Image (tube, rainbow, N blue to C red; front, side):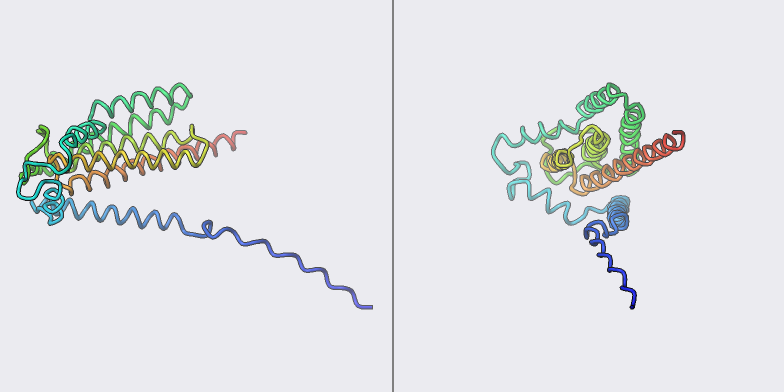
Amino acid sequence: MQAMAPPLLPLDPEAHASRRRPWPLIAGVLVAIALLALLFLASAIARGDVLAFDRTLILAMRVPGHPAVPIGPPKLPSIARDITALGSGTVLTLVVVVTTALLLLHRMWRTAALAVVATLSGSTAVSLLKQLFARARPDLVEHLMRETSNSFPSGHSANSAIVYLTVATLLFPLIPLRRVRLFVTAATMAIVGMIGVSRVYLGVHWPSDVLAGWIFGALWALGWWQAELMLFRSARQRAAAGG
């Protein structure tokens, strides 16, 4: 009598498609594209060029034929100044101080130190870049607020991206729900975006200044988030080995 063949085992279901996507490769490509865009802008500014989209976008925010008159209702310039204040040194410093205090209260010493170092070093880097390129403020339209520093990159755009995005990512351990994390990230990006647009609307920055500030700030925040992730994994491995 022939022996019966063993029953076939059911195949495990395939992993979800998203798990098979090469996210590290995709992230690397996006970072490379951002770096190339930043280098392109920097090289153009170093040559003293005014890019075509700079003129187009900054004039689009003024009444045609009247570069001193911004588009929109009369209260819009005041609203723009309020929004741009969210990227000022005073407001950003308060955000960092409150965030650091919150992290210290949760005994997250390493994360608190990273928040301070990341934002202070980022602000210093932006100041050095401004001195290096020494780009003049736009002269096509009237400025709706007084500014005295150099134009490239936009300090408000870069520093707001550095501070708000860094703070948002470093606070993730305190936010357990994924949907809340997504909301915080989206809200942060919206605030950073509005701050940059307000700088162009007020006539104190070329659009390329703002774009470079966004890219630099986002890359800076991403780098420090990656550093925090590496330190966290290293600490967890040491704890597991010691236990």
